[in-house]
Image 1 (tube, helix red, strand yellow):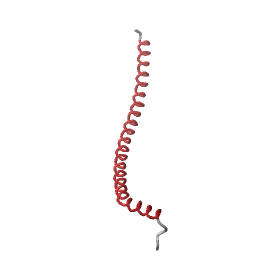
Image 2: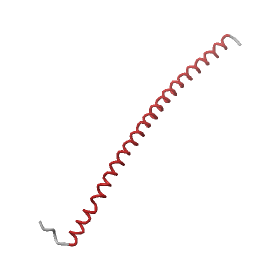
Image 3: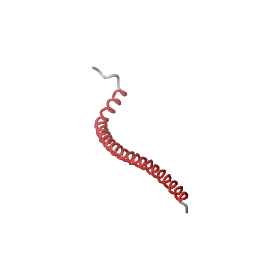
Image 4: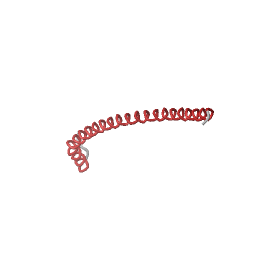
Length: 88
C-alpha cells in the first residue's frame, strides 16, 4: 500500500469517526430527552394518583352526607306532593 493510499484510507476513517461521534452525540441528546420525559411522566403519574385519592375521599364524604340527608329530602318532597303547600 502506498503512502497516498494509506493517507486516503486514514482520511476516510477519520471522516467516519467524526460522523459516528456526531451520531453518538445526537443519540445521547435523544436519550437524555427520553429520560427526562419518563421522569416527568412518573411525577405526573404520582400526582394523578394523589389527586384521584383526594377525589375519592371527597366523593365518599359527599356520598355519606347525601345518604344521611336523602331520606329527609325525599320525605319532604313526597309530603309536598301529597298535600297542599305547607302552611307558614
